[in-house]
Length: 225
Image 1 (cartoon, rainbow, N blue to C red):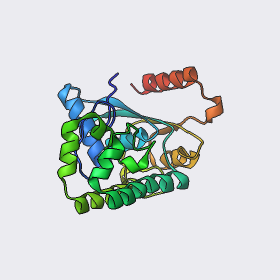
Image 2: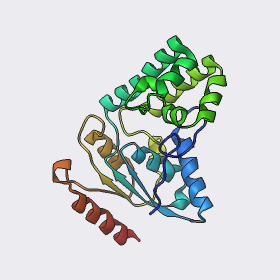
Image 3: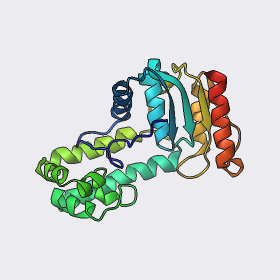
């Protein structure tokens, strides 16, 4: 099993540029290429389901199957996610890049402190990155924030790939639904509707335990391997 930190998360580096699902998947395929792995099961949880979905659409030859645990989705998810970017946009516009750097040094992530921005962890952890962050043009940065938030979270259903792309994913896909404001069950049903080789585990979170989820995933992989 290969567990990696998505860009701007954990110990992965980053670049100040427009964020996109396609960009996230490029790093995933680059990692597999670096490790000389031709194809793998692609597993995502929460927002990682959207990355996995995009990976399956963009790199079908490298996708042995998709394991989608609690896909994000739903109106509340979309609104709350877009609002985080707007809060950061307004903060950066009023306080400038220096204010963003000072806020980010508080050590909280973007999801815990939206005003700190998507690159908060990188700013707090790497002095060189913080210096490069300060050197950029503010107006260009504000444009990236607006477009990133608008295009990453542009629908009430699970984001990651366009419906027509999802319908073209032939890899076997296991969908394990969530049921809260960030993981609306409708997001899981959306994937169930579009993925042609989907297996929807019709067990809601109260009936899901660590052991039953692990057993279901392994059973699915053995069946399709």
